Length: 213
Image 1 (cartoon, rainbow, N blue to C red):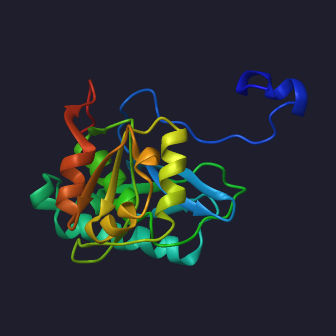
Image 2: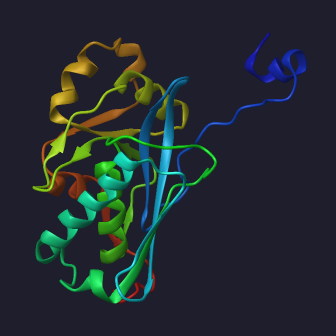
């Protein structure tokens, strides 16, 4: 029995798992989530349309995750000048944040830095590295906090062909407990502040015809 012959013996594949994006995108970031059956990729998409600052959040998001979105938005607003974003960006546009697979409930604080990166990418029109994933909670001061389920999240990243992972500095000890064979092919970046996340995750390249947000 080989991976290629599995369907012959077990039938058609019933479950699917996330894969790394093929191209760098604007406003779309790959996060890492823990589930009861192991780690999984968590895609976050952000789109802005002309409006009056309304915020729409979809994808079966729990209370804690919605609070993470609010925290990420506040951090971006408070550091708009540093990030090169117009200070009144939040008042001129309606923001829609979506997490695909809406039938699956999602909750927890670990997508904080992923949401922040999505927003910064959107309003700077800079692309996010496609084969990079991240997990970490964000505070209103822009600090990155550690999260759990690291081993499961790393296995999900490797399965999805991710080759770079951003983690909180305090999660370094969790990596030390994992067998080196499981870490092969992945570069880990340990951060403490959101500025480090943005520097690592975003390319210097904007889209071909960037929107003036």
